Image 1: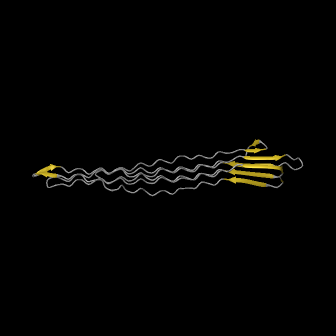
Image 2: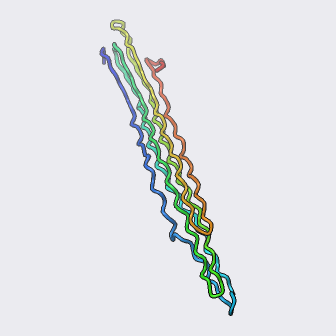
Image 3: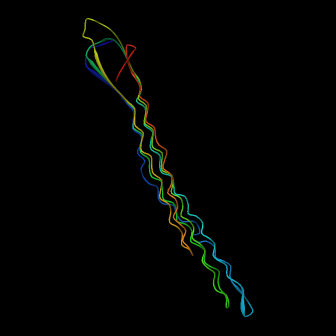
Length: 224
């Protein structure tokens, strides 16, 4: 096979999907309020047993994890074997970009502290329980990895009857996508003392960029 015309050959990998939508906040603990304290009881004309304090609220639910970014597809290698070449040839091998990830969802609210136990004729009502701590925010999604860029191999016969071919090549690996940040912590539940807000979730794992291939003309590596 011979070729004397300018030519451009490319293999480009598809980019990974950007999945940046944040999941909805977590709902409340079921039931939304902790148990009530025990009721008081009288002993004759005085208080016999004091009313119990309401139960402490449970911690809120952990937020949903953010979505991971899509993986970049590799740019496949190019193999070009031709008998006679003349002119300029351009080669492009490019790995797909990694997709960006989503933020973690917000943690759910802490459970409301339970009501104090009922009073009696001679005993006061119990104190409300402490509110639950808000839920931890969800994990951020992992950024998608960039695709590799494959090798370029060109083999041709040297023919002095035609001008020597010239070459240019771009071999570019895909860059990894951005990782998602952790979600916000949930609000603390109400109570005799309110529960604190939940911790922010951890960020997603850092992505990696792809690996670059090399270019070989008649077995000799050249700088792309």
